[in-house]
Image 1 (cartoon, helix red, strand yellow):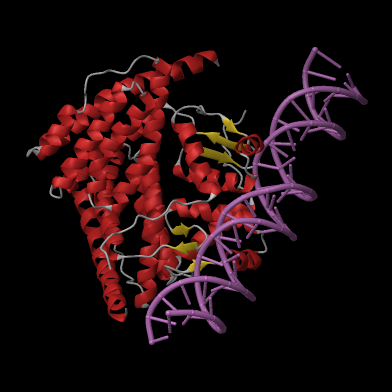
Image 2 (image 1 turned 30 degrees about the vertical axis):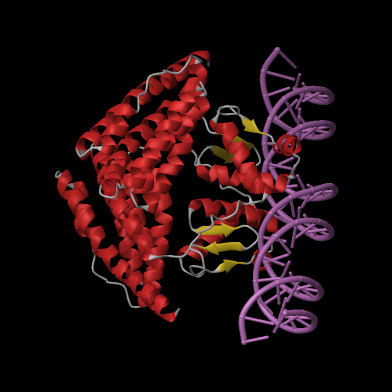
Length: 230
Length: 230
DNA sequence: GACAAGCAGATTGTCGACAATCTAGCAATA
DNA sequence: TATTGCTAGATTGTCGACAATCTGCTTGTC
């Protein structure tokens, strides 16, 4: 018997494809926060019946990017500053934990994967593909969670990631300006390769600060405008 | 306008009721880990069609207590020692965070609620209702998360709670002996009312240790037996 | 004009039936 | 005997139609 291990074949249910399509539409901002999802319209567009669509929507509700009100409809979650702030402060603690747990487990495969993902971010930056840039940056950041060898920690991160990606995409879309072309992840990658765990933790925390602060002030601005309008 | 605030009326969809029924069955151990859920059989027992049942199952899959394999079936998750260990070490960090965040926000309402939940645990203990004992103990513990004023932290705790309840119920069921009648939560409650935050954090960590260690050794025993059997 | 009642349309929730897929058992073959 | 191919039964995935509920508008009344 050869020691080749096959990866599981793709899920070929309509439901799984619908989940992927909807998630992508939400995370890239094609479906805007607060927007209602009309089941009949979407099912016709996708050429599917409502049954698998509804099941897919239940999954995304539990994933935290949709919200459902019985007999009223299912909506893309509304983004308020408090949510972003909560996610931000929670993420800080999670990051410290992830780095601590992953630290001793770093090996050549870790460093290789780190470089690979870093390169993917740089490629997306060169391509001026902002959506992919956010996606790859989060994947780069997620490596420490994958390496931390704790299923609950990883799962929590993955849940959080959906919303983070949505927040950042929203932000990008709003300011609608070319993405910074300099490489903001260089230091992070170097520190993760180094010997000073505390320094890596500190940098992760501060680096996150920068992105989040900008995002927060944007969301606060939105809310101020909304309350004035009402 | 009177300042009375009404609580939202109950969700009256079959789906919501099915979710509640299934969750309860799983968390109390009536549905055992690894067991397959036959859709037709369950839908007939509940006198419901498969559509709302399937939607309910999708929710519980995302909640992390069911797992689904396309065209094969949906199963109650299998409990392995590693999962318990992961949940345990993750919970330690979360607890520290929750206590820290909730600490400054403690008020009379917090202390009242703390007593109320503590009383509920004692009542369940007097009634020898082990299921309810686990449930109320987790609710007592969850108060610091509700008071921490962080939606992501609270949501993460609630997700984790499902699994914790399942683990403990399984354990209880297995050893099948009367529950300790002494009040193990007295110190915890007193410390949360006190002035020394670090002490409260330390106790939470150590108190959890006790329960988990027992649970872990039980799960390890199960796995050892299973591997021998195979 | 203000307000309540009721109707029409649209949308979500649920149902029963059909299609696609899997599993276990048996027969055929080397 | 071990392996492969096939078939029947059971189960999951998907569909189209119907029932329950909501929303906005119209109508009638004062």
